[in-house]
Length: 251
Image (tube, rainbow, N blue to C red; front, side, top):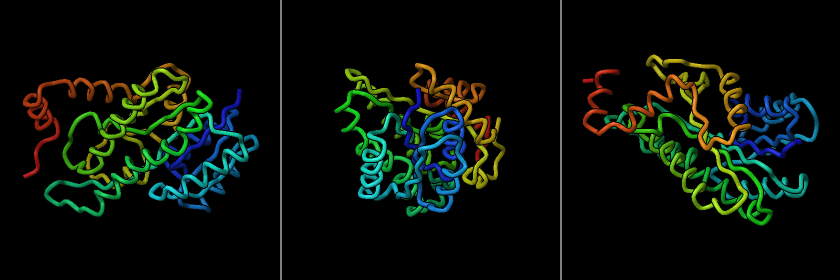
């Protein structure tokens, strides 16, 4: 059965690849981001019909509300929200740029809160729906040169758990996506080796597979995500010792 899926942060990267894959699978997709031209071209390329391109800015509550109102009017509701909007700048605490930190936290975390706050009342009224949030393996525990980004993704991981607890007595499902390294314009900023780097299309396939499961967390590639999960449960002294041993410490 076709679902009505709203993907925010869909103009490129994982969001765009995921939207294309979902449309190919027969879902009705609404794609949102700030770039009107890219959104229109993306929606026009989708298989099937009934898709929408809705420009918005995740920092603007009014634009999110307006996009949701249009979906309610044209679709009669949203079955699934997928929040993929992301900002990233590699950054050390020694060279902290507060403007970039604020952009990452507002886009990656606060924007997700705004989007969920827009869709949740209607989902609660229907007692149906699904919320999918894009976290990251970088949110499992503190890493070097991830100032701002890591904190925002740790917040997303926590937010998804909060939602799961609070909505446990409803029929609304919550899923958290924690990818490893995916080849996008964001990871192109990295100057270090990225193990098990994958394409956005491969990542989208992993997400779609996870969406069809009952799992709370969709994490991949497993060789990386399971290793980082193991590191995350270690006592802090041992964790930091191993981290220094694995990646070294800049002087």
